[in-house]
Amino acid sequence: MKVLISEKRIAERIKSLAQEVRADYKDEVPIFIGILKGSFIFMADLVREYRAECELDFMAVASYGAGKSGTGVIRMVKDIGANIRKRHVLVVEDIIDTGLTSNYIRQYLALRQPKSIEFVALLDKHKARKIDINIKYTGFKIPTNFVVGYGLDYGERYRQLPYVAICDD
Ligand code: 5GP
Image 1 (cartoon, protein in one colour):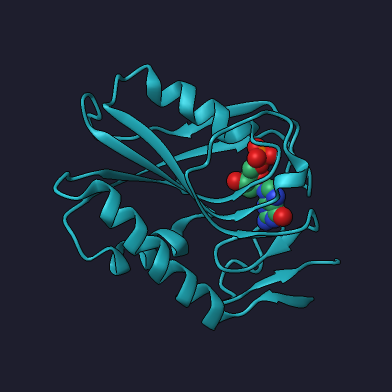
Image 2 (spheres, rainbow, N blue to C red):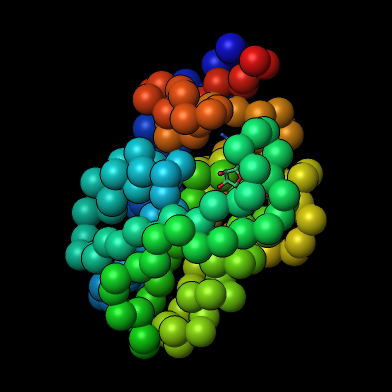
């Protein structure tokens, strides 16, 4: 296990991301939708740095298969409770890899007719993209290695690590 992004760098980046997002939503009250489980720590840190009014909700999706590579077949595990019609939605993701999960989420949420849908992702493996998807806010562009920590798991382990590390298990 090798540290890729330290706790300090994550904290600094989230602070500036939160400022950027806040400036864009100005007087609106956006709904942040965290994608479980991987985004739970990022979501908690991001909203505490946001320092303006917002609402929160969560949804969970799963890609079939529990190893290091998903199958691209995505299913809904937990739906949102909020009514997002005519609201500004910001989807909070841990990591974008192929982009297939985010693409599914965007299409799913778009059916509910929000005023806008944007994405914020802490980590972006841009070289692994299989589908072109617009991620408005990105924390860090990273290589395609499998990473864990700061909410991200390998077989449900390592989510609690306060940093992001490359997992060679
Ligand atoms: P995508 O659909 O963009 O290929 O994959 C997104 C999902 O795959 C993420 O939400 C995450 O659950 C999982 N994933 C992709 N890369 C990694 C990684 O390096 N580490 C972990 N723990 N999960 C990953």
